[in-house]
Image (tube, rainbow, N blue to C red):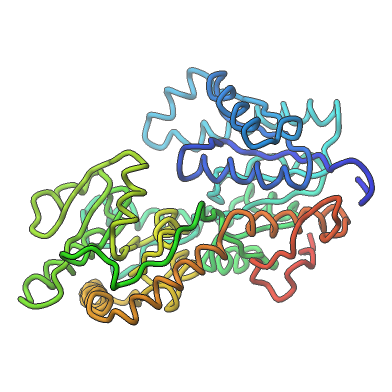
Length: 437
């Protein structure tokens, strides 16, 4: 184990997916690597081919991290790639990949030992990987995926959703108690949950303290919006994501329909970005401007032009689009549960209690009306959105994790040799006190 005055700690990160320009899990993996490289020298295990590895190496050089980060690729076999396309085939192939990744990790560890291992992506708790078997301090998470669709909303969309979500709820009860989850959790020096729902669920099953930290972070943060400077025309409410039943788009569309039926102010346009099986919910609907999938620069431009953002997901670990909206200064109308509850508050958006579908639709309509008719409140929430986005940046998130690395290694978290920050995003009262094994 390194001392505060020794060489930089050697870290091994398990990042099944990692990419500097893609969104979601690949971007999470990439940012975890960048932040960890501020603390130590990082080896990364990932599922990638030669072309992707070259992209990553070039990105490392652009970040000024050459010599601090090395990538070790473990590709899927042809059989695994075929099996992943079969329903239910993903996790068995992912598990096989994790076994091969462990064998490579063991060979690398034997040549030059690591000081700490961190399982990063995928963020889902169902497959914790095997890096905890290396017999070095182990960090797992932040993990998500324990949240379920609220019971009152199971029958609001398709029969397929009703069946699938009920089965998923049962699966969560079983898999949270699974052997591999328990083994990895018992071995973890630090176990992180991505939201308060996951913290509650994991603590209830594992019987040990679990820290809470958002699994993702905001990128560049813009400036607040001012009602007096908005473009004339209808109030532009933006929604973005996969068009599938669990994203709750039907709730926003119905709220818009109710506003239009009321025959009064405000005049609202719902802009929808995304595609999927529920495209019929928005296609040719009055008041809805459906854009489908658009290039990322165009989406960033829409954030800049929109007036507010709607986040209606019925189950989500966090929601990267919500973070992007906050960073653009957009007040967020959101279902007040799971990750959204942790990310947003009444200081940067309008929370909608998750009660019944009819009540939620009514409250969404009320929230949009309030934003579109109260300039002072709008300006205050936009300022709050920018402040919240700044507090959720990747730098601060990385500081929190690096502080935990330092404590796991017995180092001073404030050491100039191993900058780690003060862990301000950790919500436990004992922020930097190591969780006992």
